[in-house]
Image (cartoon, protein in one colour):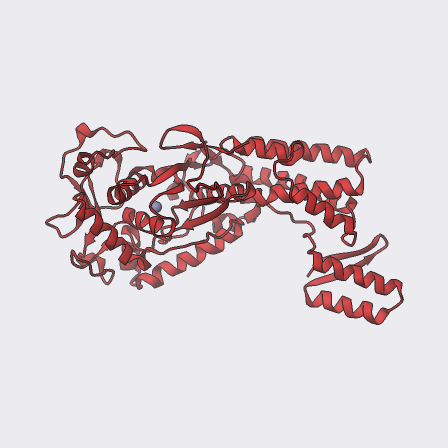
Length: 481
Ligand SMILES: [Zn+2]
């Protein structure tokens, strides 16, 4: 069965078909952080959602190119630079480092490309030049370059594809210079902002004089530079639909005359303790705030992954406690399966793991039900439902003594396969790589042959590779140091 996703462009659920005629590769762009502060839990919901899509596409066999930009010059950043008296890179690099550390804490895969706006000024200028040459951008008396919505619409293009806009209220030639504005102030928006004294040392030269790029053009320039004029997926939080994504479409299609993005996906808002997050309400959390309260990245990831991406989600500290309990249920079951499963030195084990690992689209079992759920516009709640049904089933069979070692091993392998999508891992034993398992086997053979010198040498070799052997009455076990 194929993957279906809601497309904000058509406001309907559509079959996901990549532009690549072989159907194998997918280009995916997710608007990244504006590095002026620590990302908050609402931002993290979007990045965990992007990680879920990326992992699921890879699970389905697509080869994904994941691009996430770093906005390292924009209105809020300039303000921060001015207030802290730091240089632009000093100011942004601290938040960028924190962002990637947090991304790792939440076990999100690192994007393949992480372009910085300040490293693509030449591409941004080239794109604006194209828009000027095509007559849809102009330099105003203030020296800044704006995108003309009137000229764009006059050339047969539609402005307002993601969001319905009332053009009766639009006064042609009215301009908006700030990066963020509301639907009511829809107007010609800035592509290049002429240098003003408040910008301090943050400026570049351009054919229109010194200045800096607007926020929206950064994403158009960097996404098309890496993924081409047309690509498959563009993601972001729903707060980016207008004006950011609407402007991205206008700038990109205005310059190339080609459709910019096939599927637009937007993650819904996050409430915290039932309310819109705000510093004054005390419900504003960065990831670090939650870690300081004793929660783990794994618990936070799990909670963010429990709700469908298009539903407004109420994130609560009670919910995090619940996440801890749910994860403990999964861990307990996996721990029992590990105890029962074939020992790591058993050659049948690796065969079973391999077989289960290649069973994408298998007709029955956890993996098939999990896939069927996520194929329906990433119905994650249904997918978790299948996971917990499976946990109950496994616990029952373990209690009944009706699960043999091979079945336990195969069950673990099925879990590993779907966990490649969920990314919650386990706090229990880590999977032993084949070369390490082979060394354990060789040590057992040496001990059996009473070659204790060799057995000790292998033990030392394993230790050097980060594994210790625990000899138990039930046999030898490996533990990661
Ligand atoms: Zn963007």
